[in-house]
Amino acid sequence: MSTTVTEAPSLEPQYEYFFRDGRYDNKRKVLRGDQAIDTFDEIPLVDIGGIFSDKYEERLSAAKEVAKVCKTVGFMYIKNHGISQELMDKVFKLSHEYHAQPFDVKMQQDVYKSPTLRGYEIHHTKVPGGRAVKKESFLYSYDPDNDPQPPRLSQGRRELCIGIHNQWPSQFPDFRTTLLEYQATLLQLSRALLRTFALGLGAGEHYFDPIVTAPFVSIILQHYPPRAPGAEDLDSLGAHSDFETFTILNQDMVGGLEILNKNGIYIPAKPIRGTFVVNVGDFLQRISNDTFVSTVHRVRNTSGSERYSIPFFFSFNMDEAVQVMPACTSEANPAKYGPRNLHEYTAARRKLQREKYEQGNRDALG
Ligand SMILES: O=C(O)CCC(=O)C(=O)O
Image (cartoon, rainbow, N blue to C red; front, side, top):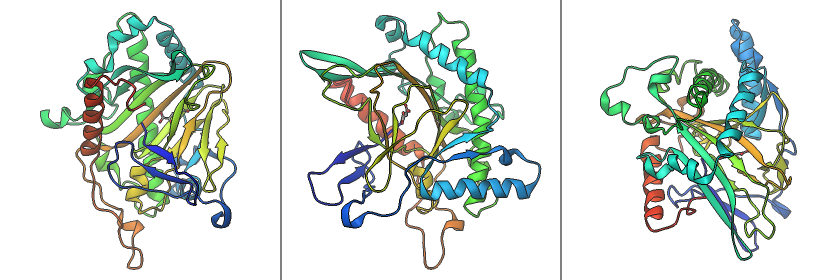
């Protein structure tokens, strides 16, 4: 789930950042030359076991460690997260099986058949004499009927949960059940991580609990074929930041994810088996008054092999107008942003995507 970066011709800053539909003027500099600053050159690995402790002091200590990384890098590997390796591997197996099907079969779940664009999506790049597949995705989202903490929702609020329009292939008996189990398991981890973020930002541990009762969640089974010879676009997924609150990424061992440091250098997030990569999204940067940073990243599959990854994007209840956290403001540092809800933003993106599609451009938001 992404926003886009463009490269400006020469002078500093070399990059400016904006949402890819041009909304919400949200720019970011990349510092080089005289402006270069001390920044990260690796992605930290954090043992988050302490966030599940019965002892407050241990949860606080884990939260402080997590917050330190979120303030500086915005990306970390997490271990001791409580998700079994078996489940992490099982979802990859299903993703391989799904993407190995013929194109026409996958198109039975074409995203444009779903009112909320859930299902199968494909993006291409130009190559000499034609086009090649750059990336293909199977997307599904939060379905309130599958929440281990089932919410009580009016019909109107239920309809804001875009996962009620998920499309599932019927030919794999355990595809739907396993992917929903994965979603339910990561939902629990996400709510625990959000309590950790709240603590690390100086708020009460349960500060966010009331606004993640029916959260925005989107999960994508990403498949990146090897870069095609002569491909016009070198990126498998262009430079962007995530617009949600945070992302929990399960990547295979192929590699290709790269994180942009503040001096404009891409740092590879080399796969570490058994870990997830967690990153701060734009929404968390915003409501933390820029205390946490949402960092630009991209994917380049130069391996010559197929790459698979499964990002899990998490944010607040769709209709919740979320304010900058009082814990992140002071007289000297007042709130820089007004309240915002995710429904407004994601609905505008989906509308734009459908309009582009109707104009005949399937790759418009690739
Ligand atoms: O595939 C990856 O490693 C990253 C995916 C990602 O950044 C996205 O889907 O927004």
